[in-house]
Length: 142
Image (cartoon, rainbow, N blue to C red; front, side, top):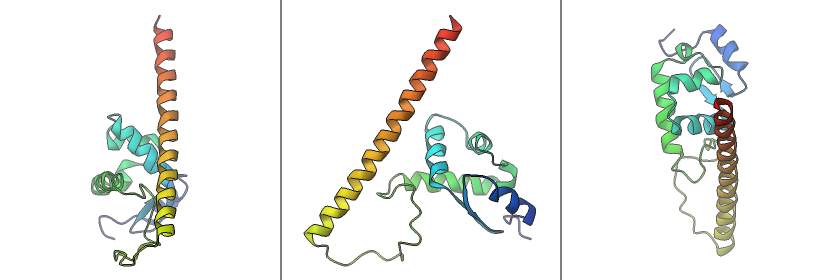
């Protein structure tokens, strides 16, 4: 087996993790929820190895290269309209050359707006929970 391959035992272990969408001997596909949680923790200064541990992954099984590649891939995905969504099934790799009708453009913009609203609501909830936790900790210190 190659250095970056998972053993059958490791595959079974990874399959049990709720944040794994799909895993094979060669690759692992993470759930969108994990990507969002990972990104929030990463933005809050948490180290990648600690984030993986927090969500039930053995960092040694994944390996340093796979962990680093995942972080770099997420950085790129934050810049995409689709965000962390896995677009491999929807995207042939070729850019669309078709001219969109006005209705199609409106539908795309509506969809983009909806996704941004959901993202905004999610971030508001995270901030609220963080503020609540900070105030609880400050009360406990007194």
